[in-house]
Length: 339
Ligand code: ADP
Ligand code: DP6
Ligand code: CO
Image (cartoon, rainbow, N blue to C red; front, side, top):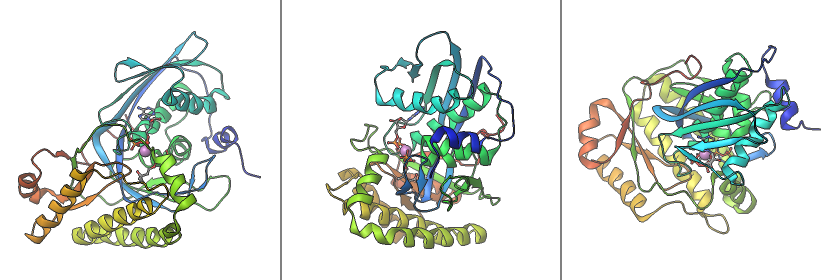
């Protein structure tokens, strides 16, 4: 029989005696998957069908502060505004904190800031639940052990398991029903020249969130049968590309992986098309750039925004094509496990 999330938390915690502190604060970067997580094999503990690999977004992400309050329920403030206690956002945050409340009960004021758009396909759930996990580790005096906290953050949002690290992170899907072998780890390789360009198409919240989109795909898309094979192959190729610092192989594999995931979304029912006309224009522009010899590739998550992959020495050529892009240096930003 599989564990409940609260039982899993106790299993995942590092050796420690949780002691309630009055306040804590943490930052976690968002991350962009080069090999995507798409599909769950077990929903309660958020165990994925496939392993995935990402790169962190430097200073772009979430800062979250927790304060113990004397109140009947949690208070949640997002980007300076208090959220309705009945909102899905607050319910998800409170449910996640409930896991820790089984250690020592307390109510919190949660003050969180995203410097990326929320729920627009720029992985706010990744930085959001990673920062919340780190802040809760501070409140309960739990050591900042990457493997333990990654397993815990995973239960908030799968992609959050990869947001506790700077640089490349690989989330091992694991095999066990208790999820203890499903966590992310940082890769030892750096790639100082690698840059991400965020091309914002719209900051509007998507109408189908990643979680619902994933379920719809696994429930209704026959093409999805092939996805685990594609993901396993791409992950292996990306590891080779990173080891050899082969940018062409990295870019081609990431772009192919993203489009393969979107193919399963489009072939779901009802169809899931996260693209806007401007997303397609941006993709075509990337292909035109490459035809002119500018080495740039794209990836996209469950949303219309585009993330470009290029190297520092191509920055001016890429900026000429995408003047509005925000450039991210993945190696420039706070280390979430240290800060
Ligand atoms: P995204 O592409 O932004 O990750 P998702 O649909 O995966 O979109 O997740 C959006 C959800 O992530 C929000 O509705 C909310 O539940 C959660 N989330 C976003 N930001 C935060 C935050 N700062 N703290 C806690 N949860 C957050
Ligand atoms: C397309 O981690 O947001 O961005 O685990 O249900 O919270 P939940 O989903 P989430 O899914 C991310 C999907 C993706 C690909 C990826 O980040 O790997
Ligand atoms: Co998300």
